[in-house]
Amino acid sequence: MTLKRNTWQREAVREALDGTGGFISAQSLHQTLHQNGSPIGLATVYRALSDLASQGEADSLQSPEGEALYRACSTEGHHHHLICRNCGLTVEIEAHEVESWAKRVAAEHGFTEAAHVVDVFGLCADCSARAAAH
Image (cartoon, rainbow, N blue to C red; front, side):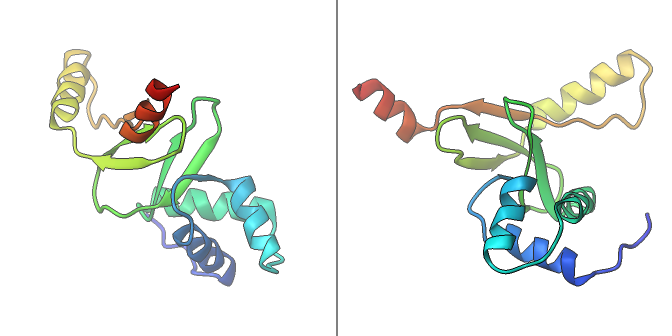
């Protein structure tokens, strides 16, 4: 793995990502940076987010609409997410059963060094209660 230079742009993206409460798109993060006076370009934001995700410093997932979303990683190591489709609440979870299943299925098909991403979308308890009240 090659080390990336820690440029001011990358640091600005990392700090802006740390300041968000949950997952955010590159476009939204870029807009936030610009509102705070940063001249950083959108392509640079995309590149920095991709680098942060590949180095485990940011979580990355795809929204149900297919958009890449990012957030500062608060848990070291491999983990999964429960994500509320309504409010965006995200809970990091371990899923040992998923890990075992992924390794077993990969091996059954002759695959090695298998990697996976599991994000479970649903409604959190608060959003479920609000939906039931209506």
